[in-house]
Image 1: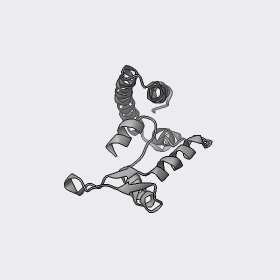
Image 2 (image 1 turned 90 degrees about the vertical axis):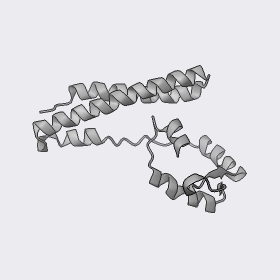
Image 3 (image 1 turned 180 degrees about the vertical axis):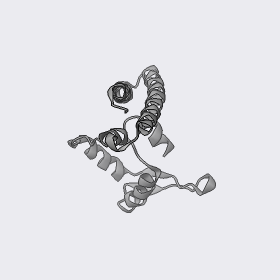
Length: 144
């Protein structure tokens, strides 16, 4: 989970419950195998040869359409039902989140470039643009 979060979290949201729900299913299908239990009863998994082939096929598939689910935009859409204070707090909280996330992902871009991983850096640049766009939009969103 930690490795997935480090690599994917800036542009792909996931929850621990999603990951832990899927791992046994992947194991049943022979795509991953259980490793030796780790500290605190942690259960590592490793990808199998079949899992690597399946992953390679998945990478070659058409990715499909983006799914947009922004909880701040959803609440702003119902802004007339909020108080001015609620809207200001919502905006302030979102500004703080996106500012901090932008700083973190910029550091990740810098590290990816330093390590020579242009693919990772490119995907991370998407996250940079997303947080910049969110901050720009928040400036223009009506807050009471």
